[in-house]
Image (cartoon, rainbow, N blue to C red):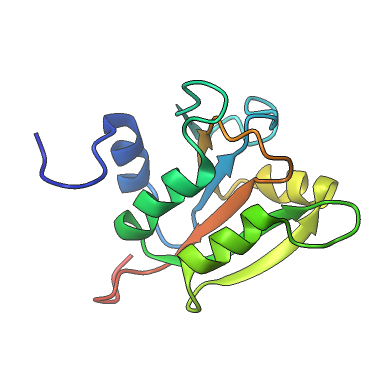
Length: 142
C-alpha cells in the first residue's frame, strides 16, 4: 500500500514508464479510445459511468503526480474554448502552456507516437479532451 493520492496501479505503472516529452491523453466519454491513439499507448479505463470520473477529477490528481510542460485541447468548430477548457487552465496554472486544436487536428496529435497513456474518462461534456505533455522533474531529471 502507498500513502499517496494516486493509488491506481495501472496508471501509476503507465506514468512511471513515461518520460519527458511523453504525452497523456485524458479522453472524454465520446472519444474513440481504441482508434484515436497509437496502438502502443497504455489504455487506462476510468470511465466508471457517464459523468464519473470527469477529466477535471483525473487532472487534479495528475498535476500532483507528474511534471507537466504543455497541454492541448480540442475546440469546437467556432474555435472558442469551452467551459471545460477554462477549468483545465485554472488547474494547470500559468506554468503550463495550452494550445488548441480543431477536432481532426486534435485527433492527429492524439495519434502521435509520443502518446504513451490514454485515460478513458466518463466525462460526457463535448470537446472535453485533454492532451498533456510530461515535462521534467523539479530536480531536472526526466
